[in-house]
Length: 606
Image (cartoon, rainbow, N blue to C red):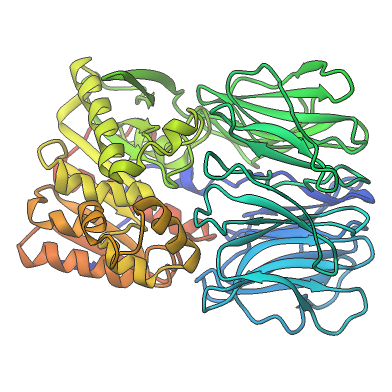
């Protein structure tokens, strides 16, 4: 076993693919929408910036060593609130700082550090936040304007998430999982005194969610905009928590639909996702009129309606990184400097028994099939790949490898039966879909059967480890980043919120259903691993703790396996751009050293 604790020799291919500056949707205070803040990585670490739209300038607001992820502006656009992750473990505290300048201060006095479970701030200064403490209990904390300490509005030992605060500050929306499955939550609305106003649940048949950007409450009202799955796919509904009236919004669109209120409350901005691409629509609530909005072919990552009737959205395709656009097609913010086009992506429907597995394929622009092929598995598992910019995929194409991204069962965007269809045989179900994709690409002459690489991060990294042990004849090499290698050990060390997910997925704890955890654990199949393996792990990872991955690697090393472990001082993910670039260099160098590969198709940029 080799343990790397420093950077590996950089590969001679363009790791700038993973360093491409990320453009995210700005956020603004609803009473002062001309003041915008955004998250960017111009310094190499994700920080929040103030965007002066009139003057065109951008001023950095935060300088957190581990970067920032969560933030918002108060309605009047006076304060920036952000979650300060103290050491990369996802535990920390909410901070706030005045936009006009001044020191940052703790935003919720009296609230101990924990993991964030939502935040909302009202025009009066009232703030509500969900925090999960070290013992696993989640409390909804409320800080009244002028108060010197926050109070607990509501709490539970089961998962909770703060959904939002109404404009008049009379209603607080909470998502809860008292039934035990946080991936299928129910809704509860409380008053600012903690009194119950109304409840809505689709349990056990489905869950109810709210979209993460903006408020779920009707502007100036109490109606809640939520996402249900009663028809087998995400779709919007309106719920009055006082009268209990529910109105399902029938858009007639065939894919996944999520929605935001427009600022005047008369319409919904719909985000429709199908076959790995996005569309935007405006849905008029009075008469159901549906208007398609002009967006290019690719992926809309996030969109929001502006008070002037415009819509801002971030957009990317497989060929180019994200930009910020308006409905006129103008780029409001884009990646600075030259952008080298990446390879386009093609959706390949793979037959698998009575199923069809969506696969998104990109190939290098030189060389001939069959290509050495990287099967790059997404995390989640409830995310999905499609026609959007993917830095690692582009870097593999630059290095001369084809890339297949498989939306295996467990992925979103193919219906809820597909999304939860992996639970009967966790890990093995997903890998049967991946194996079908490999067989299809090999049979079609695209993938070289002797040079197929299994790779992924988070859940994709877990599937990589499990696949090397359960499908040893299929894979020539493995690359796992931020992965679970020993499932029972990971359960005991990980975040409390993830333990709830595991209990729902497996039907109990490792002590209650040990056979199910063992069947899904890569450690169980360590003796069968034959392919060379590179593992990258963060020593502060709270989701896939480092102890369990070290245990898995030791089991491989004990039988003389070709396994390299690289440790780094990060959490589950890193907001520092050089971490991703270094990981990309390490992985390509490892694969070249084990199975070879064609010459890079693009030289390193100057």
